[in-house]
Each structure stands twice: as C-alpha cells, then as structure tokens.
Amino acid sequence: MFTCAILYFLPGLVTYKMMAIFMAGISSVVLLWILANLKRKVDTLLLTFFLFAILIFLYYTTASLYGKINEKYNSFFLVLAGQIAPTVLCAIAVAQMKRVQYKMKQYAPYVGALFTFISFTAAFFPDSATSGGFVATESGLNYQTTSYLAAYAAAFNLYFIIFNDKIKWIGLVKNTKYVRIYFILVLINLMSIMIAGGRGGLLLFLIQAMFAYWTYTKKKNIKFFSGRTIQLIIAVSVIAVIGIAFASSFGGATNGFSRIVNTVEHQDENGRDVLRGLALLSFLDSPIWGHGFGSVFYEVGEYSHNCITDALVEIGVIGCSVFILLLIMTWRKTGKLMQVDLTDAIWRIVYLDGLVMSFFSGYYLGHIPIYWIMGFVLGYSVRKNNLKNQISQADNLYRY
Image (cartoon, rainbow, N blue to C red; front, side):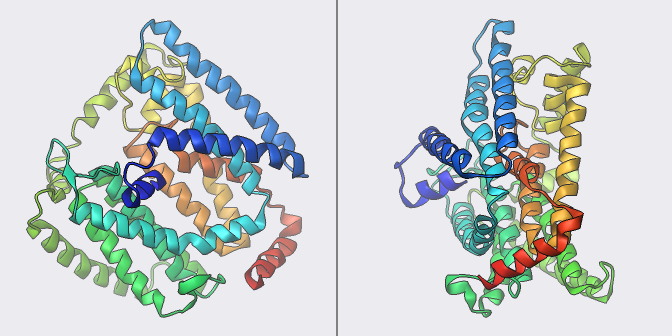
C-alpha cells in the first residue's frame, strides 16, 4: 500500500520489488542495532529468527519435490524471506518501544487521510482499467487493493474520531474541529469501496465500523445494544440507501458496484470457490502433514484466497491447527492490551486488516499486517501484577 502511495505521487520512481529489497536491507541493519541495545526480548528475537530460517528452508525445498518452476511460488518465497521475516522481528522490537508505539498512534489520522485521498482518486478517476473494465492505476492499485486501501483508511479515520480526546495529536489534527471532517472521510471511504467494487474491502469496512462502535461503547462505558445503537442503525441505513443509489447510478466506465451486487444476489465469487474446492481436494491427498510450505502453487496453480484452505494444503490439519491457535492467541492478547490502555485498539485494527485479507484476498504467508501484529504481541508483556505501572506509563506518554 505504501509503495502505491509513493508511486502515486512519484510515478516510476520505484518498483515493488525494489521497495521490498530496500526495506529488507534497512530492517536488517536496524535489527542488528536493536539486538545490541535492547535489554529485553533478545532471546525471543533470536529464537524467532531461527524459526524463520527453518521455515524459509522448508519453503525453499518444496520446489525440488515437484521438479519445476512456478513464478508465484518464487515471488512469495521472496515475500516470506525479505518481508514477512523482518516484519515479525521488527514488530517484536517495537513491542518494547513505548514511545514508538505512541508515535504510531499519533500518525494514524495522517495515514488515514493519505489512504483516503489515494483510494478516492483511484476509484473515481483511475488512469487505466483491468481487462474486466474495473479500476486500475499505473501506481499499482486495482479494484481490489483500492477497496482495501479505503477500508484501511476508514479504520484509522474512525480511530482518530473515537480517541480524539485521549491522544496528544500532532500537527493540524490537534484542533478538534477536524473530527467532523474525518466523519466525511469515512463516508468517502465507503463510496470509494462501492465504486471500486472490492467485496473483501467492503466486508472489512463493515467489520472495522462495528469494531469502532464497540470500542466507543467501551470508552463511554455504555451498553453495546442501547438507544444509541438504534439511532446508529437508522443513520447507517439511511446512509447505505443513499450510497447504494449513488453507486448504482454512477456513470464511470470502471464502476465496479455490479461485482458487489452479483455477490449478494447470485453468490458469484469470481472463480474463487473453484480454487478452494481444488485446495480441499489436494488437502485430502495429504490431510495430516500437508504437501509442504508453498505447495499450493503447485497443487492448485494459485493460492486459494483463503488462509485456512491454503494452510490445509501446505501444512495439513496439524499445522493449520497451530496457525488457528496463533490467530486466537493474537486476538486475545490484543484484548488484554486494550484492558490496560484502550487506545491500544489500534493493534486490533491492524489485526483485523490482515485477518480479513487473509480470509478473502490473498496468500496466507504473504500478509504483512497479520504477521506484524503476531510478532508484536509475541514481544509484548502484560503482567497482571504490574498493570498499575503500565497504566501510569501510558498516562506519561499522553502527557509527553
């Protein structure tokens, strides 16, 4: 997403692979510095490094079992070695850096505004189109990534709206009048998703909106189902009707709203149900251990657009069970962080971003958000006998 953001303003400056290699190099240097200076979790960093070394080796050896080259297999091997591994190691380190975490929260509204602008222009004013006539841009965004970009933006925009009085914001957004503007940005995000036609992005938007309201009720200490809930449902229903009417009548050549309509009315999954069926058949050939990391590209020819079916093909019931347990552990741990400091809801926002994409739109070993947050909670310690001290630290960071 950030690569597309750079290319939007500076087209042709960098390719995705160049950006990935650059970030991997920078991460390696920074991680060495962190190892030399961190007093805690160094053992976790080293253990995680060796586990990833084993994982990368196992992934690399899978190709030899099939005796042929698959370009997508090679591509995601580079993602695993050059992006996912340093991402997790970086997240473990960030979990020990309270001020870095606070800075990330402070920059959330700016990321939300940036992503809103880019997804809006990509959806409504694309510079090219895919073969199906849907949104595509020279910066690398298509209908799918545009929709997810807008959903990411909405989550960060809602975060700013909810916690506008809980975080010491920096720059322009210090003025509370910008809260109203961010409500408008969320509506723009919804319109961008509907025009782009990304079904996974729309689902993510709805999930993030429900999570935002749940977080709001925790902050205000009110019941989730209350009079305000009914008012909100009415308001959302009115906005939805207006939005659907606008999206269906929008005359742009790349209007992808019909994709969403076809999914609702005809359960049209654009061939992904076929991929998942093939993945399940492959899983039945080796249900316990699977066919090996990366094998879905040889067994199915493409990832199945679902993290569970991908995991079943590659690592079988045993490995998939471990993967699901990690997902559950991460969800519970982000909940514990929110009990200490509700503004840590931002980590669950990142979790949901990665989780929904993993379930609907990508290869399970290629989603940076979900593995970043896994690494973050792995490196974060919440001790019940030290909650008061941690709450005090959060208050001090707010004053800072």
